[in-house]
Image (cartoon, rainbow, N blue to C red; front, side, top):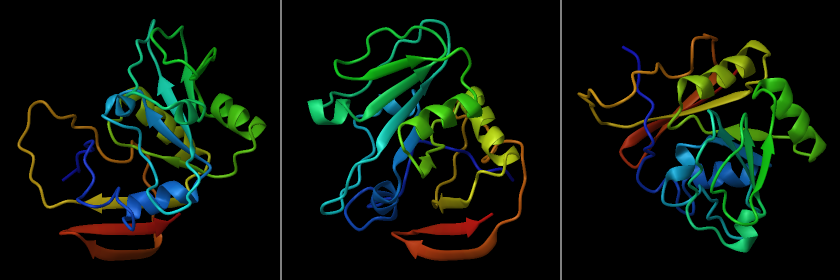
Length: 191
């Protein structure tokens, strides 16, 4: 049975000491979809003294209307929107880069120019076009680590996306580890 990607992470995962908060401090940037950016706040590391990553928001579609929760001036300077067409309603201080095509090569070139070495791809709220980016990462063998939180919820849904987790590419994981975290199971493996 395929899992369903939702915008949920387990209780405490994004709080200090939680696995997601710790992941956020380990990466130079985090790629998120414009749908995930609509949440009440951008994902943060809540670890003491953590540098926040650069937020790379992928906005695709004609005249994308972007809604990002209220941002402080400091956080706005750490947000770049990569769009394939002009974006309306981008908050003050947020950089918008309109690319001819949102593809792996364009994204990696831009991130390399900014000196980013490691990027977390947050697959929550993934659309089909966002999932195709993940496929590009997988095909070019750029996925190094996979972290999956399995929550004890059963979704009998018509409204949820039935997008199979991980896109259409399959690959084995090595050095698979798992542990229980707040009633769920966290699995980490390497490609």
